[in-house]
Length: 349
Image (cartoon, rainbow, N blue to C red; front, side):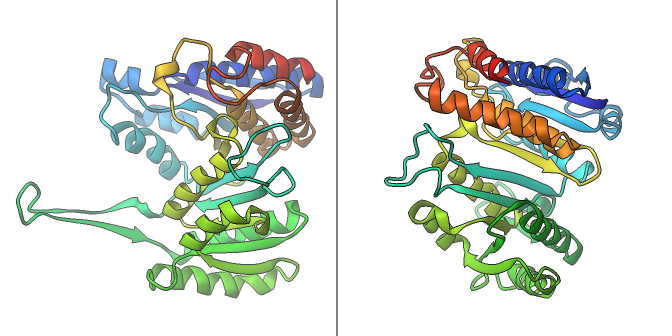
């Protein structure tokens, strides 16, 4: 029995979560486990209705769950930054979800914009530090609104935060990847303080994992090579900002936001799993959004909980739907409705 908090969120979040739960219910029937689910009304609609974003009482409740299954956050009538900081970032920081895990995997039958590349070329994982860096919120304004305005945003990197992220990446690479190659993504030639810390820690920890090959590349070079030679990468580890950027690039080369799932993880504690795309409000209620990213996020959640056989079976079903059923991964272009795609995966499972 696993206690799961479900946050559909905004826009198409409810539709995506509904199909993700449909597949999870099929998995629990087949693989003999149980998900005890509780819904939470968090997001733009609640904020506009009550002024609340994430009450402390709800935050304390979330700490008692095994996992959080998130739909999407973002509302067109709420100023950008309010929900992102008040809900998403607050959950990451307060729950100490220090790893953002993003598999970048091209499935058979899915188109990639990279000419001449196929599933054998695009199969890597990005491990992003998730609670420090430029997203820590350090900084402020001086003389705001005047011609002399100054804005400062600081990147905070602690040895503790950097090292636990690197250790997670080394262990993930050693235990779950065949190639066992770990690439540090940074900018040591310009960001000479933050990434000096990252690089020193990387090479000081590395000898503890002698079976893992170490590599380094600047973030601009990685952005180029992810397009030119994605087959070079196995596991990439990086800071919060660079990870945010390169994982969106990763989503595009694996076929788009409709297939991209991610986990916000604290090993051994409550962790949160979600499709990495936004709430796509223009598609709300039309039944055309692709739910595969949410379904894949559910598979990641099961793997995190230890239900590895069920997680692998969901991924296999998603691969079959991608390769044999769908015309495209784009919203309204799949050849099936949102609910029908969920049915296809659940039926195969």
